[in-house]
Length: 591
Ligand SMILES: Nc1ncnc2c1ncn2[C@@H]1O[C@H](COP(=O)(O)OP(=O)(O)OP(=O)(O)O)[C@@H](O)[C@H]1O
Ligand SMILES: [Mg+2]
Image (cartoon, rainbow, N blue to C red; front, top):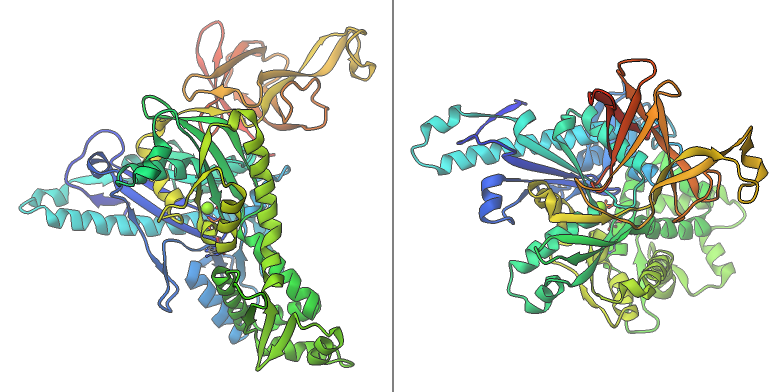
């Protein structure tokens, strides 16, 4: 695939913004041209993925397949199909198939570039290789589509024969935006950045966008472009709204206020948790494990990938279609692989599966004509772990006095299409206006494109945690515990730079810390969930990484480290105090 594509004109700045939404369960991309954006911001190209059986979706499943040599082979529906085919002819051994692996990065404290992922057959591979292969696939796919769009664009301009010869360098003229959950810690964000760079995205052309923030930008732009006055009110000057990105892995929440210049202020730090759609899947699998036994499911998974895949598809469909029926005795029918019952009977020689159901005398679960028939209240219960965690969290936020002005809840992400979840939120938050945009599943990726064209639209954020360093002060027995005493000094003191919740402004909020390189060539950064932690050893405090300095002029040089807060990632610069010369410095959050 060529790294140069033709365009009509070449202006300074990024001609194109290309965004990749790398999801736990589904991933997609979108892009737009700057001139289109200036005329109509919603003129965004996105790709429709197909499973080859007539289903078209705005995102494809996040599945990656490597061959026996460890080389990337396929992504998405193709990976799924190929792995099932290999398995049906018993040729899959040694291939590596990965699914749902984005959650490995969520809240992991010991993430490194050596962190391993386990595949479907229990074999491992460095996570960075899997992530970068997936991003590379999406990037290449996007560039192919982009080339096509350019070609079509050119064709539509009559008589512009010269256009073909003018080139755009994809390395200079595309700004790449990669979305990440807002609640991710600094090491997970850095891991994604490294994976993207390894996938061939130039570091200087890469911006990380926070998923619910991107969705907020998209929803506002989309709503304001229509004439729906009830929804437009949610985005009027001074109004506050909450965006809840309901994904497969995480639920990710931000709260914004519309500023007078139409920019968005974050009014509360991002929050959320691992309560996405896959938590419902886990509950469904737990139910099946209780019914058939873990071993039976493991044997099916090992011996018949095709049937396992069919079972995944059936359960996904039933999950998506589920609605609480008015009749009290509503049922859910599951057509599960016949092998599941056969394996059960083989493994349990004293009792067949039907005998087991009979013995349990449960009319809540029955088997009729090859189908498992389950009472709807059992199936409903499988959503509740996720829904209860979410609503409890939302209620806690909404109870805060500084959240009283939040009048609108905007639900985005694939899981926002879940009927029982929607109903539960509407029933719990009767005083709020709940909006579910038409393009709930592509709001994140399209919003990421809009963010790339205008990152200044978010004019302030809130510090997600307290950042600081470890320092030593003269020991004072009246205030300092003896355990921190070392000679005349009190050590491990948490010197706070930015307390949690502080308003941080991109390009403006910075902290300067000076130190002597004779003592050290790095500065350790700590974080805390408390506003005023005393010591770095307090509960809730942890080391997040360090700033590495290199290339200092002398062995004993006074250096100013400038830490920049407010962007989607932390940035750092260092200067020699005496000369003002810049020194290379970078945050290192990956151990
Ligand atoms: N109608 C529906 N009912 C229930 N769940 C649904 C429905 N439609 C989609 N989902 C679930 O939504 C999830 C996918 O949402 P989405 O594509 O936003 O997640 P993601 O971007 O892959 O994950 P994350 O943002 O957490 O990384 C899946 O768990 C899917 O089963
Ligand atoms: Mg998502």
